[in-house]
Amino acid sequence: MLTSITALSLIGISCNSTTTKTLPYDSTSMNKTFDLRYGTTIGIPSENLAISFEKLTESRCPKDVNCIQAGKGVVTLKVTVGNQSEDLVLSVKGLCEDEPRCGEAKNVLQYNITLMSLTPYPDAVLMDEKQYVAKMIVTEKSKVSVGETR
Image (tube, rainbow, N blue to C red; front, side, top):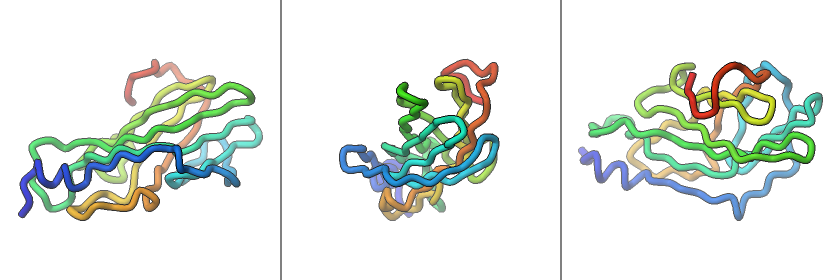
């Protein structure tokens, strides 16, 4: 069995967008969950909105390992509406899988973007960042303040 410190260092992934290609992109619609794979962009044409999954930091406690902390998975997105763009950082809790309470929601520009889950959940083996998929939903801007979680 791996110690928690060793396990976390084994899966510590931090990937930069400098090598990420984001075109062509798929499309989706408002209020509908969608999957966004690392290094890709998805658009909502009716809103002139594009979201790119640009960076990943993985520190969630691996399956079948006893850890001191649950850790978290963090995604950095580039959100573009028309000619405006902002970076958005969202996280999911470690030791929490495929549940709405696992992810974080924030307002950006005029939208509320929720990261519902990040898969695959890590195990003791270092994973390829290209395998990661963020399940998300975009809704109209809500009363959630930037930095607050749902």
